[in-house]
Image 1: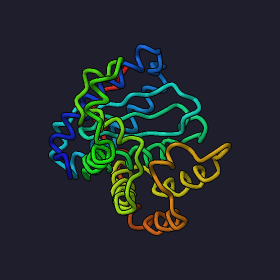
Image 2 (image 1 turned 60 degrees about the vertical axis):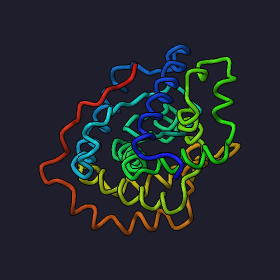
Image 3 (image 1 turned 45 degrees about the vertical axis):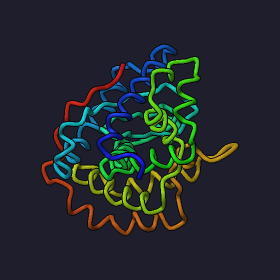
Image 4 (image 1 turned 180 degrees about the vertical axis):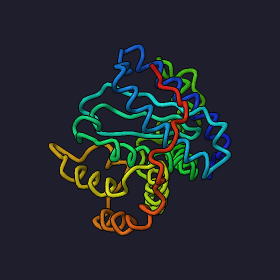
Length: 243
Protein backbone atom coordinates (compact mmCIF):
# COMPACT_ATOMS: atom_id res chain seq x y z
CA UNK A 1 0.00 0.00 0.00
CA UNK A 2 1.58 3.25 -1.18
CA UNK A 3 -1.38 5.41 -0.18
CA UNK A 4 -3.62 5.30 2.89
CA UNK A 5 -7.41 5.00 2.69
CA UNK A 6 -7.66 8.57 4.05
CA UNK A 7 -5.32 9.94 1.40
CA UNK A 8 -7.17 7.96 -1.25
CA UNK A 9 -10.36 9.85 -0.39
CA UNK A 10 -8.63 13.23 -0.64
CA UNK A 11 -6.93 12.45 -3.94
CA UNK A 12 -10.00 10.76 -5.41
CA UNK A 13 -11.96 13.95 -4.85
CA UNK A 14 -9.41 15.89 -6.90
CA UNK A 15 -9.59 13.32 -9.69
CA UNK A 16 -13.39 13.22 -9.58
CA UNK A 17 -13.76 16.99 -9.80
CA UNK A 18 -11.34 17.03 -12.72
CA UNK A 19 -13.32 14.30 -14.47
CA UNK A 20 -16.62 16.08 -13.86
CA UNK A 21 -15.26 19.33 -15.28
CA UNK A 22 -14.20 17.50 -18.44
CA UNK A 23 -17.61 15.84 -18.76
CA UNK A 24 -19.46 19.11 -18.20
CA UNK A 25 -17.31 20.91 -20.77
CA UNK A 26 -18.23 18.24 -23.32
CA UNK A 27 -21.92 18.19 -22.36
CA UNK A 28 -21.68 14.57 -21.22
CA UNK A 29 -23.54 14.87 -17.90
CA UNK A 30 -27.11 13.60 -18.06
CA UNK A 31 -29.77 15.88 -16.59
CA UNK A 32 -32.92 14.13 -17.85
CA UNK A 33 -35.28 14.25 -14.82
CA UNK A 34 -36.53 10.68 -15.22
CA UNK A 35 -33.02 9.19 -15.45
CA UNK A 36 -31.74 11.38 -12.62
CA UNK A 37 -34.65 10.39 -10.36
CA UNK A 38 -34.16 6.70 -11.07
CA UNK A 39 -30.41 6.67 -10.42
CA UNK A 40 -30.78 8.91 -7.38
CA UNK A 41 -33.43 6.65 -5.87
CA UNK A 42 -31.60 3.36 -6.42
CA UNK A 43 -28.19 4.59 -5.30
CA UNK A 44 -29.70 6.60 -2.45
CA UNK A 45 -31.27 3.46 -0.98
CA UNK A 46 -27.97 1.60 -1.28
CA UNK A 47 -26.07 4.40 0.44
CA UNK A 48 -28.56 4.38 3.32
CA UNK A 49 -27.68 0.75 4.02
CA UNK A 50 -23.95 1.17 3.31
CA UNK A 51 -23.76 3.87 5.99
CA UNK A 52 -25.49 1.58 8.48
CA UNK A 53 -22.93 -1.16 7.80
CA UNK A 54 -19.97 1.25 7.65
CA UNK A 55 -20.78 4.24 9.92
CA UNK A 56 -17.53 6.02 9.04
CA UNK A 57 -18.89 6.60 5.53
CA UNK A 58 -21.65 8.91 6.77
CA UNK A 59 -19.22 11.79 6.31
CA UNK A 60 -18.42 10.87 2.72
CA UNK A 61 -19.52 13.24 -0.03
CA UNK A 62 -21.78 10.71 -1.76
CA UNK A 63 -22.55 11.69 -5.36
CA UNK A 64 -23.25 10.19 -8.78
CA UNK A 65 -22.37 11.45 -12.24
CA UNK A 66 -24.59 9.98 -14.97
CA UNK A 67 -22.40 9.96 -18.06
CA UNK A 68 -23.96 10.23 -21.52
CA UNK A 69 -22.00 7.57 -23.38
CA UNK A 70 -24.24 5.04 -25.16
CA UNK A 71 -21.36 2.75 -26.11
CA UNK A 72 -19.68 2.40 -22.72
CA UNK A 73 -20.86 -0.38 -20.42
CA UNK A 74 -19.33 0.71 -17.15
CA UNK A 75 -19.83 2.12 -13.66
CA UNK A 76 -17.47 2.90 -10.79
CA UNK A 77 -17.15 4.33 -7.30
CA UNK A 78 -14.09 6.15 -6.02
CA UNK A 79 -12.90 6.35 -2.45
CA UNK A 80 -15.12 8.79 -0.57
CA UNK A 81 -18.35 7.75 -2.32
CA UNK A 82 -18.01 9.57 -5.63
CA UNK A 83 -19.68 7.43 -8.28
CA UNK A 84 -20.44 7.32 -11.99
CA UNK A 85 -22.71 5.24 -14.19
CA UNK A 86 -22.77 5.33 -17.99
CA UNK A 87 -25.93 5.40 -20.09
CA UNK A 88 -24.50 2.52 -22.11
CA UNK A 89 -24.76 0.08 -19.22
CA UNK A 90 -28.28 1.24 -18.39
CA UNK A 91 -29.65 1.05 -21.92
CA UNK A 92 -27.68 -1.73 -23.61
CA UNK A 93 -28.30 -4.12 -20.73
CA UNK A 94 -31.88 -2.85 -20.29
CA UNK A 95 -31.26 -2.75 -16.56
CA UNK A 96 -34.07 -3.25 -14.12
CA UNK A 97 -33.83 -1.29 -10.88
CA UNK A 98 -32.81 -4.50 -9.12
CA UNK A 99 -29.96 -5.04 -11.58
CA UNK A 100 -28.84 -1.43 -11.31
CA UNK A 101 -28.78 -1.90 -7.54
CA UNK A 102 -26.46 -4.89 -7.95
CA UNK A 103 -24.05 -2.89 -10.11
CA UNK A 104 -23.94 0.16 -7.89
CA UNK A 105 -23.93 -1.94 -4.72
CA UNK A 106 -20.90 -3.78 -6.05
CA UNK A 107 -19.13 -0.50 -6.87
CA UNK A 108 -19.94 1.01 -3.48
CA UNK A 109 -18.52 -2.14 -1.91
CA UNK A 110 -15.16 -1.60 -3.58
CA UNK A 111 -15.03 1.85 -1.96
CA UNK A 112 -16.11 0.86 1.55
CA UNK A 113 -13.67 -2.09 1.51
CA UNK A 114 -10.75 0.25 0.67
CA UNK A 115 -10.14 -1.38 -2.71
CA UNK A 116 -9.73 2.11 -4.20
CA UNK A 117 -6.60 2.70 -2.11
CA UNK A 118 -5.24 -0.68 -3.20
CA UNK A 119 -5.75 0.08 -6.90
CA UNK A 120 -4.33 3.59 -6.56
CA UNK A 121 -1.24 2.11 -4.94
CA UNK A 122 -0.88 -0.28 -7.86
CA UNK A 123 -1.32 2.56 -10.33
CA UNK A 124 1.40 4.56 -8.63
CA UNK A 125 3.74 1.57 -8.59
CA UNK A 126 3.10 0.81 -12.26
CA UNK A 127 3.33 4.43 -13.38
CA UNK A 128 6.43 5.62 -11.59
CA UNK A 129 6.36 8.79 -13.66
CA UNK A 130 2.75 9.64 -12.87
CA UNK A 131 3.60 12.90 -11.08
CA UNK A 132 5.84 13.99 -13.94
CA UNK A 133 3.07 13.12 -16.40
CA UNK A 134 0.61 15.32 -14.53
CA UNK A 135 3.06 18.22 -14.42
CA UNK A 136 3.87 17.97 -18.13
CA UNK A 137 0.26 17.69 -19.28
CA UNK A 138 -1.28 20.54 -21.25
CA UNK A 139 -4.80 19.94 -19.98
CA UNK A 140 -6.47 20.14 -16.58
CA UNK A 141 -4.37 17.22 -15.34
CA UNK A 142 -1.82 19.97 -14.67
CA UNK A 143 -3.55 20.72 -11.38
CA UNK A 144 -3.65 17.09 -10.24
CA UNK A 145 -1.13 15.64 -7.88
CA UNK A 146 0.51 12.35 -8.78
CA UNK A 147 -1.82 10.54 -6.37
CA UNK A 148 -4.89 12.16 -7.91
CA UNK A 149 -3.71 11.10 -11.34
CA UNK A 150 -3.28 7.60 -9.94
CA UNK A 151 -6.92 7.73 -8.80
CA UNK A 152 -7.92 8.30 -12.43
CA UNK A 153 -5.61 5.61 -13.76
CA UNK A 154 -6.85 3.14 -11.15
CA UNK A 155 -10.30 3.16 -12.77
CA UNK A 156 -8.83 1.22 -15.69
CA UNK A 157 -7.02 -1.37 -13.59
CA UNK A 158 -8.64 -4.75 -12.89
CA UNK A 159 -9.53 -5.64 -9.33
CA UNK A 160 -7.92 -8.66 -7.73
CA UNK A 161 -9.93 -11.87 -7.54
CA UNK A 162 -10.08 -11.46 -3.76
CA UNK A 163 -11.37 -7.90 -4.06
CA UNK A 164 -14.01 -8.98 -6.57
CA UNK A 165 -15.26 -11.79 -4.34
CA UNK A 166 -15.43 -9.42 -1.40
CA UNK A 167 -17.31 -6.77 -3.39
CA UNK A 168 -19.72 -9.40 -4.74
CA UNK A 169 -20.58 -10.49 -1.22
CA UNK A 170 -20.87 -6.99 0.26
CA UNK A 171 -22.69 -5.62 -2.78
CA UNK A 172 -25.43 -8.24 -2.90
CA UNK A 173 -25.91 -7.80 0.85
CA UNK A 174 -26.23 -4.01 0.63
CA UNK A 175 -28.71 -4.38 -2.25
CA UNK A 176 -30.78 -6.94 -0.33
CA UNK A 177 -30.89 -4.76 2.78
CA UNK A 178 -32.06 -1.89 0.55
CA UNK A 179 -34.90 -4.10 -0.72
CA UNK A 180 -33.56 -5.26 -4.10
CA UNK A 181 -33.91 -8.85 -5.33
CA UNK A 182 -30.67 -10.88 -5.03
CA UNK A 183 -31.65 -12.89 -8.12
CA UNK A 184 -30.87 -9.74 -10.12
CA UNK A 185 -27.17 -10.33 -9.45
CA UNK A 186 -27.42 -13.52 -11.50
CA UNK A 187 -29.51 -12.04 -14.32
CA UNK A 188 -27.12 -9.07 -14.47
CA UNK A 189 -24.08 -11.28 -15.12
CA UNK A 190 -26.05 -13.32 -17.64
CA UNK A 191 -26.74 -10.10 -19.55
CA UNK A 192 -23.12 -9.04 -19.18
CA UNK A 193 -21.95 -12.32 -20.67
CA UNK A 194 -24.27 -11.87 -23.65
CA UNK A 195 -22.97 -8.39 -24.50
CA UNK A 196 -19.91 -8.64 -26.69
CA UNK A 197 -19.63 -7.23 -30.15
CA UNK A 198 -15.98 -6.54 -30.98
CA UNK A 199 -14.83 -7.26 -27.44
CA UNK A 200 -15.93 -7.56 -23.83
CA UNK A 201 -17.62 -4.60 -22.11
CA UNK A 202 -15.27 -2.16 -20.39
CA UNK A 203 -16.89 -3.20 -17.13
CA UNK A 204 -15.42 -6.68 -17.57
CA UNK A 205 -11.92 -5.31 -18.16
CA UNK A 206 -11.87 -3.98 -14.61
CA UNK A 207 -14.22 -6.59 -13.14
CA UNK A 208 -13.00 -10.06 -14.13
CA UNK A 209 -15.89 -12.52 -14.28
CA UNK A 210 -14.79 -16.12 -13.63
CA UNK A 211 -17.06 -18.88 -14.86
CA UNK A 212 -18.31 -19.69 -11.37
CA UNK A 213 -19.36 -16.13 -10.53
CA UNK A 214 -23.03 -16.55 -11.39
CA UNK A 215 -23.12 -19.81 -9.46
CA UNK A 216 -21.54 -18.20 -6.39
CA UNK A 217 -23.97 -15.28 -6.46
CA UNK A 218 -26.91 -17.60 -6.99
CA UNK A 219 -25.92 -19.64 -3.95
CA UNK A 220 -26.11 -16.48 -1.83
CA UNK A 221 -29.70 -15.81 -2.91
CA UNK A 222 -31.61 -17.59 -0.12
CA UNK A 223 -29.45 -16.04 2.61
CA UNK A 224 -29.72 -12.58 1.08
CA UNK A 225 -33.51 -12.76 0.66
CA UNK A 226 -33.83 -13.16 4.40
CA UNK A 227 -32.17 -9.74 4.77
CA UNK A 228 -34.74 -7.97 2.61
CA UNK A 229 -36.96 -5.64 4.67
CA UNK A 230 -40.56 -6.74 5.04
CA UNK A 231 -41.65 -3.11 4.88
CA UNK A 232 -40.33 -2.63 1.34
CA UNK A 233 -37.42 -0.54 0.09
CA UNK A 234 -34.96 1.39 2.26
CA UNK A 235 -35.19 5.13 2.66
CA UNK A 236 -33.38 7.25 0.06
CA UNK A 237 -30.21 8.94 1.23
CA UNK A 238 -29.98 12.44 -0.33
CA UNK A 239 -27.00 11.85 -2.60
CA UNK A 240 -25.97 14.52 -5.09
CA UNK A 241 -26.49 13.91 -8.79
CA UNK A 242 -23.73 15.80 -10.58
CA UNK A 243 -25.20 17.91 -13.42
